[in-house]
Image 1 (cartoon, rainbow, N blue to C red):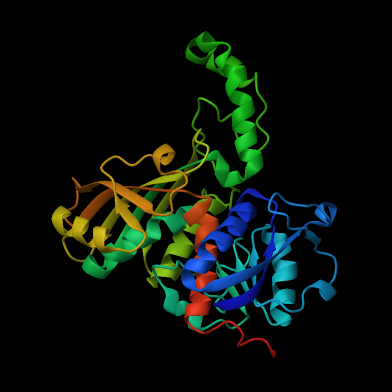
Image 2 (cartoon, rainbow, N blue to C red):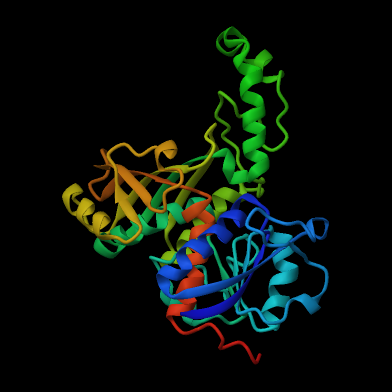
Length: 351
């Protein structure tokens, strides 16, 4: 049994809590004993968590020594400041924010898709992809290897949980208010929308669909949509992949769904596509996958696989994945496990 000391930064959040749980549960299965040290903001310092661990505040570098791995889920600004500081003390950082994903010296890794990228960790930092990109990578990797992917149209239906605990709380708060007047929902929609506050999302989310997710980047697309483009190209190593993304927020607690139209160099068949998808690690087939039914499950579900009606080289498929698990916490922990498996932990101890 290998023993490592791991810092979990952002340990009190929805994703951080799942990271701690996964480290404890999965470690013995892969021959690892993790000594978990939770970190969070200074205001949470000294707080005892439900598992008995006591939160450390991110205050100074004196607390950063002696870690083999540091897993971050605390937002981009925290990662930009503290990830290099952990790395400078010898830890390999696995970061769940968008801060480092497009840095050419930082590998962007989906555990079942491109683990070999871990062999080049120039800055001592590994990036975890965006949760929506993450869900479609395992099935697209399988299909790319078989048919050679050239174009991608991805329309996401993203859960409130993608905005963290505050997103789920806003949705839950809006539902009972709007449910009190079902006639307004049907006949006076604008009036109903004014009855609730939309602070986390662009518009009220309960009983609604919001076709704007993220920040405007100035080209008509949001940063969430640009992540789908840029991260897909980097992970699959297809620099010229044509991507048309649209990200939509839907009133679901946990679990992102993505309708994918993929165009390939070689004409696919549904039969062969199903065979390679079924053989892909981390992918399960489900004729009608839904976020509710796949919440809490590790695998990405793929269904509605069918030939495109307008292009003989195209396939349409519907992908569902738990955005807090495979979309965030699980893949980060799997990366840490791969670092162990590939003998990479400890190499930076004397940097």
